[in-house]
Image (cartoon, rainbow, N blue to C red; front, side, top):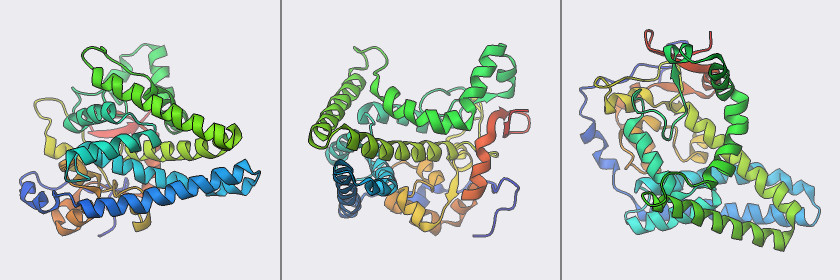
Length: 338
């Protein structure tokens, strides 16, 4: 692929008249054997790494903490499998997707059923200025920001600061927010059951680890792994839609296909990082159809030159996106605070 041509390392999206449905059709069918292979070659090493690290810490071998980055990366990959399960794309059978998704949700501190519902809203309305606020990073337009009272502007500035988004944000989201059920429990009883059930399973797991290995091993082993994975996950979710030439539009101009191919980035990472992150860097393909499993995203992207025109971000260029904060409706760009 040729190097990016713009300062923000973004290329323009493909033309909207391309027949994308026919292009993605060969990649929609899940492969249960491949999914099981992915799961086995990630979950087994994760359990082994975590077990070795926790036992080492329990015996006073602090060198065991050197394993925590490996555990964190493997946990990110497991989250991506859970993510596919939530879309019904990892396995061919729904019960298998839901069973694995529920189990992985305990490891990733994510209530599977509740998350699946909010994430579906994100997919249905990404880039829609009239449907912000569910499953996305809060983003204001310049006009909305200027209309706020001073204390609310300060609040938004703090929220969009990288130290908050990628420092406090992962702690809040995975350790606190995911533990609290929201909405009317009568109408959203499935979400409540999901959150409370995940909390109970998580508590049982942690109590077992503490009783078996002691609180220090868990605090210095399990917690760093979890927070590293959470931080990587928040960064990935941010960079998938928060870049300079992203797409935001109001109704009736908002368009699903354009939102997918112009408002979701192609995060052009080294191949090993794509493996670690479950190919979620091919996010434009994923938003075009969430039914394409992670193990088919690369092939779909590479087989169709039209998809290679999607907004492209390199790793180093993506770091500059952390300062972006406001949508400029006139210039149609995400811009930093002035």
